[in-house]
Length: 350
Picture 1 (cartoon, rainbow, N blue to C red):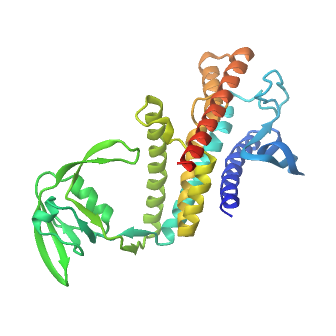
Picture 2 (cartoon, rainbow, N blue to C red):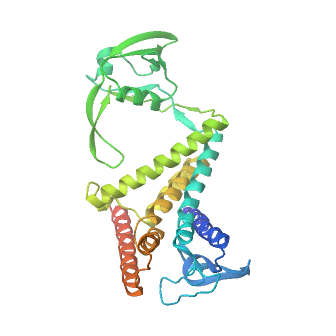
Picture 3 (tube, rainbow, N blue to C red):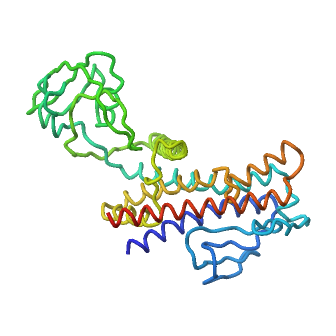
């Protein structure tokens, strides 16, 4: 069941990615010959809107085959009016960008839907207090609820953590305990911890853990739009930063995951609930958008790079160079996929 759900999620995201390319191509007058979800042998196809729509055997990608554009053979150019070849570099860049932009739009819509569904957030209620920590020294106990910091009302654990991390000196905490309000003065301490990439960082903390109690956030329409925008930007930033750290070696290659990881996380998310699946789907959608913008010749980003070169130099790169770089790009992609699969199997085997 988890495998089917994962394939459904991936297929839908691939469909919207390719739909972005398709609609952009049609809008500038390019004839789209094939719209395929998956690669390899065609399992099912039909004709509609003067295009062949198909589902193929390997559901790990998709493509839109436009007239006059063929990565496998750059010599197959066509100079008809409705060909990709005759369009300007800016028009081609518009077509290429529309796929990743469609993924970002899908993520934004999912996050917006989540926001309208009153997403849960952690309450600032303390579950555990670390021994000899600033919190314990100040007399904070398990079950205390922090309602105010330096006169600023606190509604969620995230708000509280951000204020503590930004603290400059002592903080005055207003806490609720057994129906009464008390004030505590506390000085955050720089503590060695790990970020989401597994790197050791120093962060101002007071030595408390959340009790795990949540509340439903009731966001207005405008707040929901802001929530969706911020989540989309946060996801893209996280993925870009993660790739950067992977390339320079700050994050080991063993942290990469593949299809098996996607299946497992989708399964875990499904057990939690529909909102968790929506969160994960939005993250994967942003991931697809970001990865396709990488300047690798086999991806949209690589083609954008070629068109930018043509736009600047007023001449297209030679077919020989284009072919060699494309083959190298595919080799790199398959190597990364193999590494992700290897890491997945290694984790499964412990």
